[in-house]
Length: 126
Length: 149
Image 1 (spheres, each protein chain N blue to C red):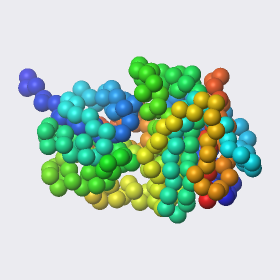
Image 2: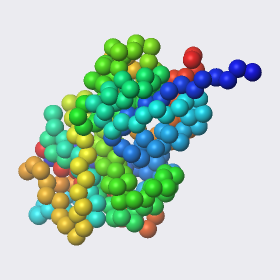
Image 3: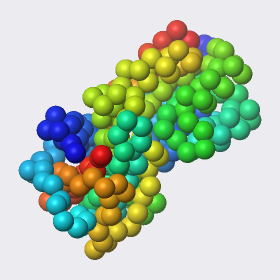
Image 4: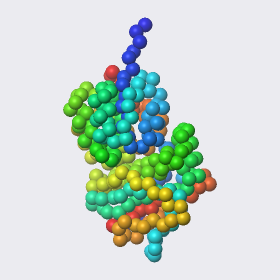
């Protein structure tokens, strides 16, 4: 039986509590956390060091916001899978994030099941 | 000055936050306007500055005891002071961010600032009078303070 290589996950959120919740997701069996960043600038540094396959991305963060970071990561690696996890609930922001290259949008607050489903949907074609 | 519909946006945001994150309902008291002086606050206050079409701040203030239970309800085992401050900022951020569903993209929110405010008062950043939305969850009391021009 062939072992499936876990996908490398980078978690980007300025909240430690949210980062830890994502680490506890059931989908984490298919993922291996390679980095955890508290802002966009840190995320870009960790991205260069760890080459993740999947990123969860907050939008409102200090230093560099999530939209700018999504643009940067997609330019570096177009096949990267990005799930935006943000409290910004207006439709225009979700549309902008998707246009910049994100693959999904999960609105805060979220249940464990909603997080699990959003990650499962992101990974369904991998 | 806030309209009734705008106050409802923040009430709905608080109700939704507790229903989803704590999986327990929050009871909302009657909102009131502070006409004189500054509102009193609990031990920790998370402040979100608002800019764009509206200016002001949205704050969530709560006692340490409430934040500790809320962390536990979220299956968070680390109930350190650092995580309590993180939580109070995240609650303020989430309720403010969710308000963009009604206020739109021009309701620009800052990253949270967290202040320890035991026995203190919250000084509104703008001339507008603050609206207080009392929140009661389990045996704990907290407040959402909305101050918008």
